Length: 277
Image (tube, rainbow, N blue to C red; front, side, top):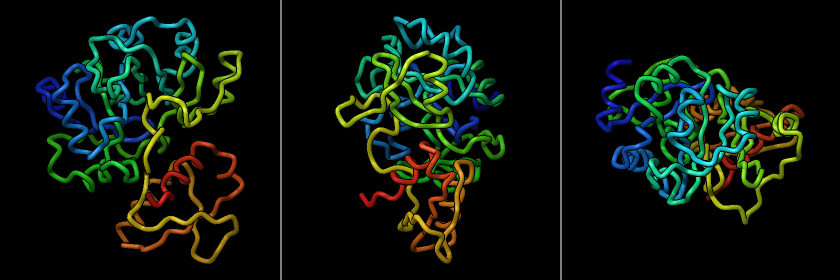
C-alpha cells in the first residue's frame, strides 16, 4: 500500500480492486498522470473518466454546486456501485471529463480502494484493461493486458460484483449507464422517474460510446439454448470472455436466459461486446 501511494503521488499508475471491477488509478489532480491512463489503455480522449473518492468530505474537492439529492443518494448507495455526474471543480483537470464542465464521481465499496484513496487522495480510475477488452475482475486479468508495464497491482482477489457501476446524471436526471444498482432503486430513493439516455445526450461518462467489453472471438447472442452455448451472469461475464480468449476460441455463443433478459446492466454489456465495430 505504501508503495502504491508513493507511486500515485509521483504521477505513476496503480491498479487496484473495487467491488465492481479493477481500476487503473492515477491522481485526479495530475494531468500528466491522467494522460498516461489514456495512453496505456489506448482509450479515446473523448471518453470521460470516473473520479473515485473515499468520503463525502472529499466531494467538494472534485465537484461544485452539489445538489441536495446527492446526499440522499449517498446515504443509501455510497460506498457502492453508483456514479453521479456533477459540476466539475476547476481543480480537476479538463482531461478527466473530455473538456466538459461535468465530472463523474463515486465512493467504491472495497477496503483496499478506500484505504488507497484515503492515503493518496481522489483518483481517476477507469477499468484496468485495454480499451474495448473485457473488464478486469481479478489481478491476473490486469496482468494479462498490461504485463510489466504497470509498476504496481494491488491484488484484492476476485471482485464481488463483476460489473461496472450505474451512472446517473443529476442535471438533468438521466440514467447514462445501467449497472449494479437498478434504475428502480434510484427512482424509489429520489421519489421521481429517471429517463434513459438517448443518442442526443452529451458523452459525460464512460460506457456511452464505442464498442466495449469485447473478446477477440466473435460474440453471438442467442434466444434458445444451443449445443455449446453458455449462460453468463454479471459476476462471471468478463471472466468467461477472457477464458474464451485464453483458449483461442473463434466464436462465443451466449444464451440469453430469462434472468439475463431481466438484467439491463448485463444486457448492455453483452450487446456492446457483440458489436462488430
